[in-house]
Image 1 (tube, rainbow, N blue to C red):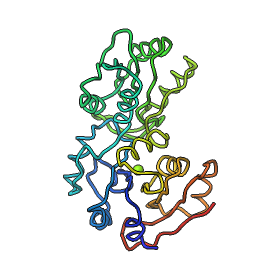
Image 2 (cartoon, helix red, strand yellow):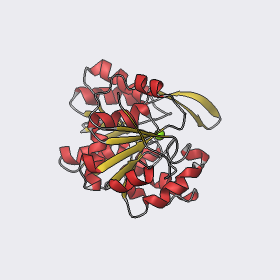
Image 3 (cartoon, protein in one colour):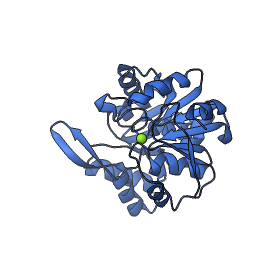
Length: 279
Ligand SMILES: [Mg+2]
């Protein structure tokens, strides 16, 4: 089956951004096949699902439009937005939140007037995002709040990542590492608001107003997009931009409890032939 025909057989799409539609948000470079894909995306019900949270969804939307990919910020779901939805369902408003994060997290949270950002006792939740200005004081305040019953919600979850800030370029410790430290110290498990967590896909389906079988996830990450969708039960199209062999892909997914079908394409060109991979 052609990618084009498969897409038209589904009512809704969840689409990853970095590595799938574009290389990296800062490089402002879309893959050439993305523009062909966008043509078949018109008239479709879709959302962009990204783990990128240290930049706000308004920023991501602006960057995408500078690449001629026009998607309103309301169609972008990131871990901060998922965290806000979790909080809205769980607590009476206003919800008190202690945020460890960067400007992007802050900008997204400001969309929710009922979230009260505070660094005083007692908070409902600690939101832990990527922050390269994190301090001992912040971590210890978070630690105490979690001990006293606050939820720990992780915005993303990578333990480290390559990046650049000011003149500093290289490996950076990320929120996943600090979350692990807080979990170890408190003995309390964090809620992870990013892919591959089920909650991320649940929010996506709810926003689309569709059921699992009506939707397909499209992404380039085996660890987040593919693992998450397969274990949640949404069909997934893996965009194999790194030209991985079938053996390599199967090996990386060895521990996944698969509830749906994995398809592979080499690019998002609508004429690509979809290959189902059974394992
Ligand atoms: Mg990606």
